[in-house]
Length: 291
Ligand code: ZN
Image (cartoon, rainbow, N blue to C red; front, side, top):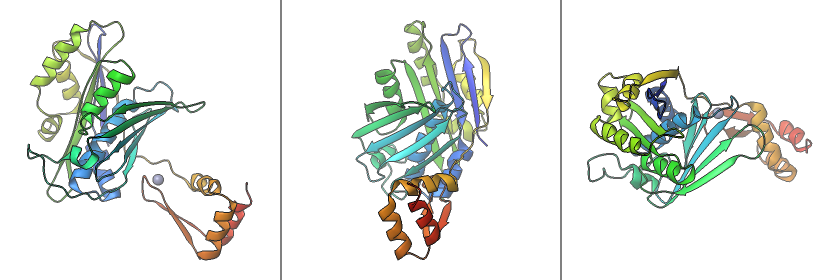
């Protein structure tokens, strides 16, 4: 289970959300059998989604991040509910590319340096709000920071990290999102950036046994931080047979009849959790009659 901490500076001008997403990212790796670089890319986006999910106000709200770059991984998608529970998938789970010039997993090389980050906030009812900003680095944290600055006008510092073992298992994953709250002095962000520049990388801290709470307090050091919330988010898919049936109905009567005729069993896999749903021809014919 993950650990997500919400802290705020003593004067209420800066908020910090920090998460240890190791378990969530480890589960994503198990479900999608991703190569190391893709585990890092998907893991960073899942971590960002979790941090952005808990910012949502309504219980039924959700946020979807879609990174559509020109890299070999293809589109990377992460969805979070308002408690920070996430699910995600990537178009091409296996991308083998060399380490980047810093000797690190080349996330930008897998995602691509050109393309768009889409942020869709769904409020349960009515039209979702969709923001789109260009990819600025493909390393994801910078892309999230840019999204907040350009689309929501919120000065933000974002850090995301995923550390992968040579056997492809996840050692640690986490991140934080520091944001200026309305009415805060713009100089504060410069002070926050200085503080953040001094603290070690998130995965280094987590691997050394530091908690999300430690990271939140370190990121707000000197700002008299206090913890105002915490939760235990996890990798969670909300798929169901009913949902899959609705999706099948939407593909149309003719198509369903054809599938029923051609295949003794039609298998539909959930993109997010790989759960398999099987439909016999007579079930498909029944769905064909629904619309
Ligand atoms: Zn599922």
